[in-house]
Image 1: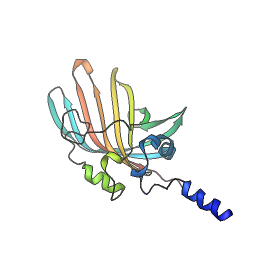
Image 2 (image 1 turned 90 degrees about the vertical axis):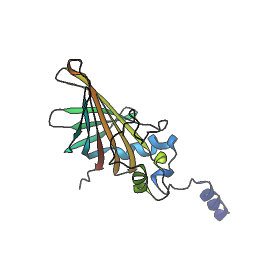
Image 3 (image 1 turned 30 degrees about the vertical axis):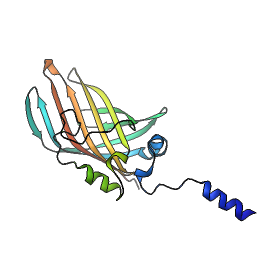
Image 4 (image 1 turned 180 degrees about the horizontal axis):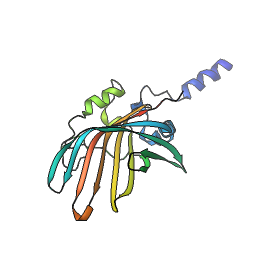
Length: 191
């Protein structure tokens, strides 16, 4: 009888996810959110910047450190830069399908360094880009008296690496400014 009960228990238990892509979107926040808590490094890759109609390439910037913290029922992140410390709200975005194409409204437009196939391949052989958990980080800060909105959209490749793009926009003296850059977030292992 004990063997039968054990066999039934094993059959009823959910199968363990083979890769991060196997976790259903409805469970991203509950299962993956706690894995984000801790210290991280942000690598700021190349990008593009726009001032009015002028477009120019942006070189990579120095790495930044960050701490992801539990916050009420959600997560928050402190991102440290030489100018200030920024606080981001973190959510998972299962309902969003981030366009990887060259459409102007895409957060990844003009960032040819990112390939949907390559990103999905990092997470596993059978992984498609739309199956990767999507992590959305948003903040509104003030720079020299001008509000700036920043958004970071990252695909969770593993519990130790997220890759995507960051964007910002502001209008100092009524002049629209925006920028986008490739970003990679990797866990800092503390011994």
